[in-house]
Image (cartoon, rainbow, N blue to C red):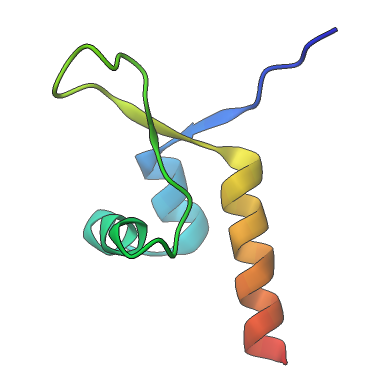
Length: 68
């Protein structure tokens, strides 16, 4: 059985990271944060989501770096 990844919204990402939307996008542009995915790639202003596992993995890496 294929299990699709759980997706989360920008609001949820901001709550998990405590970062603002602008800071999250700044990190994405630098390649320092998981990329978002458009729900409707054919629309210019489509809602975006992130894969929960990627954001959680990023958070675990950051906690590990800060504790080292």
